[in-house]
Length: 339
Image 1 (cartoon, rainbow, N blue to C red):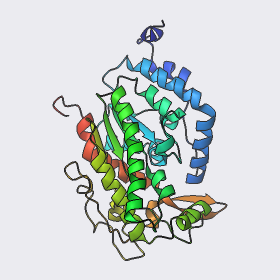
Image 2: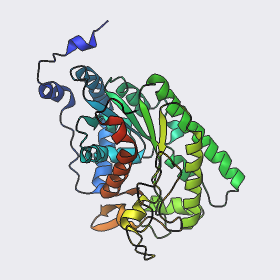
Image 3: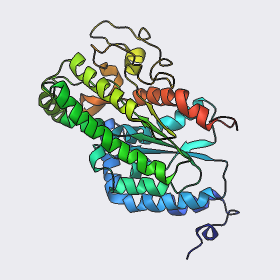
Image 4: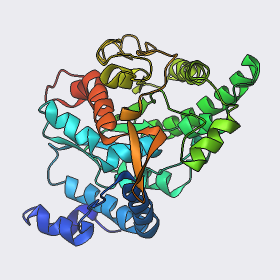
């Protein structure tokens, strides 16, 4: 049997050891479109590379147990938090300098991932491997949103909605329970979403098709449905050391809604949205879509296209600030009496 810890020399500079196994992970994309394409290509071609990196992170962590790691795993909302290093930046804003996200998060996140096909996927396996690292203190998980968008329609009866949402909640809980069993000492934070921006005139064909598949819902219809799902998910979180946060109305606070005349800073403060004492509390206005300024944009041959579901880099920065403020700050700051 190989002694993994004997394979590294803790007196050797970490930079030289890491460069051998990690190389340079860079995202030199000039637009969100390039970022998406580049990230997908990198993941498809180098998954084994990142699994090796996860193993080396586990080995190298034995040299410095003071560092703390947050694993970012799940769907596109996790992947963009990973690529933009949103949580890392938010942690530094709070002067938490000994915590970072896993450098292998491109292998533990995937655009378009559904909860019902996560388990036993390569991304699930990479997350399991990342959890072997003893410095891991938090697993940040985003999953379930694609399941809702691909199965919901505004013409469903409340009973039909319940059947679909209960199935998705069950699928998400199976993922949570698996990781909680592997690392019961790690805090798991399931992170929800914010209001989308689906419209009939979206220039991105996939989003336009999805909008029509959902029955061309008005803002209130789709927002009410996803908040209902969010509340069901919140009620289902019962595993010890597992927590839930959602971000509905967060972008309304920071960006307002220019189409309706809603000014920024008028709706509920982020401090009140999904706080640990009231995780179901939303902000914003359910009658409104998220403003275009908060959404990701894609440059297609000089034409700027607006995303219907994903936030901009600034939007994910606000989401990360929200997450760190309510949970990660207390969990990761260097005080022995924090829990």
